[in-house]
Each structure stands twice: as C-alpha cells, then as structure tokens.
Length: 136
Image (tube, rainbow, N blue to C red; front, top):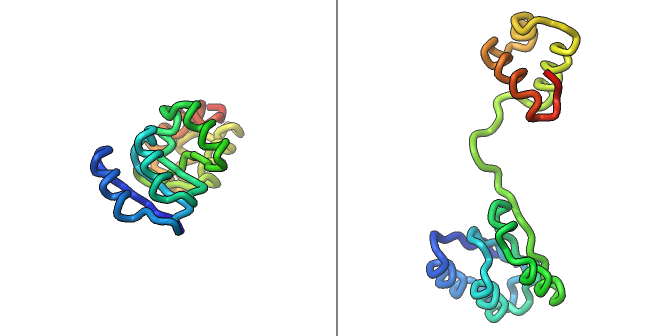
C-alpha cells in the first residue's frame, strides 16, 4: 500500500505519519527532507516499507550515509517529482519545427506565420534555444 503525507514542518509530518503508517504500508512519499528522525519514525511504524520518496529538490540534501544504510536494508530512497509550475503552451514537436525552420534560414516573422506562434514568442524561444541544447 502506498501512502502520501504532506506537511509544513517536521512536527506536523510526524503527527500525520503516526496516523497512516501500519504493517501494510510498502511505499511512502513525504514532501519534506527525510531526516534520520523521520526515517526511523517511518521504519518503526511501517516495517514492510521498501520505498521512500521525496521531492527531487530535497533529495540531494539527504546524507549519502542515510541512503547507503537504507539500501543495505533493502529500502530505496528516491526522488519523485510532481510537475510544478505552469504547463508549456507549445509542445516539443512545435518547438523542434521552429528550430528547424530557423536553421533553414526562415525569418522569424515567417516562422510566426507558419507555426501560429506570436512573433515575440518566436524571438524568445530562439533566444533561449541554447538552454535547450539547440542552436540559434
């Protein structure tokens, strides 16, 4: 059984964990950095846990010793991402087409007309192309 627990601070997290953890739980997602105290709390109340996950931004802050100790016990500690922010308006295919047209020498105004992307957005996407590994 999978359990997701979200809290604003460690004290609140521990209180919520106490109410949902039992022997049947095998996966736990927590939205805070998994400290030793939190992990011990989880393992004491849910001895059959095999996977613990946290946000990708917090995973690098977890001690390598903790990750290694958990892996020796057969427990995976993994980053698990939930999409954040505003969804992209233009799909990857549209953006690839935009870059392809730009490489062929098509002017931005014509790219805008062909793709239906506003001219200002075309300039923006072409200007940030190096961030995506594309050429301007």
